[in-house]
Amino acid sequence: QVTLRESGPALVKPTQTLTLTCTFSGFSLSTSGMSVSWIRQPPGKALEWLALIDWNDDKYFSTSLKTRLTISKDTSKNQVVLTMTNMGPVDTATFYCARSLYSGYDYWGQGALVTVSS
Amino acid sequence: DIQMTQSPSSLSASVGDRVTITCRASQTIGRYLNWYQQRPGKAPKLLIYAASRLQSGVPSRFSGSGSGTDFTLTISSLQPEDFATYYCQQSYTTPYTFGQGTNLEIK
Image (cartoon, rainbow over all chains, first blue to last red; front, side, top):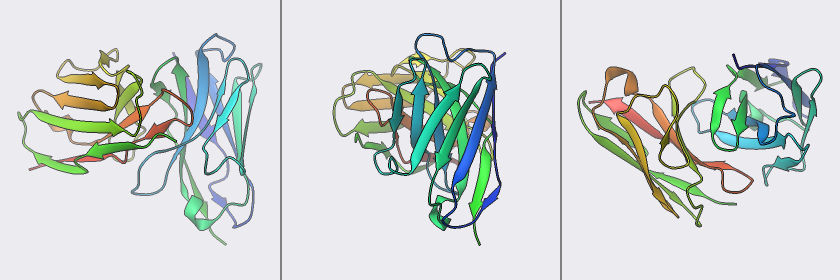
């Protein structure tokens, strides 16, 4: 079955760089049309799309955050890594990774809460 | 970026009611519109993709319609487990964007 799991620090200090890893199973990111995205949700607020990497290693980013984000994949390890630089308190959120095969995010990780505080 | 606007932002309804949530895109997105349900403390769940296609395992009381810029999610007869927050999302072009959410509460 398809599963995704986010991992990374629960607490980061302001100005630090956040690195999150999405480890997945049950599908291959080499499959045509497949993609993995990162989506975040500040406490009590709406979902915000951050970044996507697809089977062809094409990468897409949120317009407002693209200068701070990188995304990469390790197909052999079934992992997708997101980095976000210069973290601030407003970046406190639950970060989700999710899979899409052409349309809609049909599988999601359980989410990882990241708090930015000194 | 394409802006997605949902209405209403919140909605009170009773078990058995028929409810409709609307989502409007700031430019045409064809039928590249998805709907999600999110319960508190849980990851979103895909309900509808491509505007009207029911995701596997989702009850048939959920339905979606629309194309271009205007879309609707309808729940034909509310069940207790349907009280949650609903989001629309466009997958027409990156950056993909979500609506601000509709909180469906028990009346």
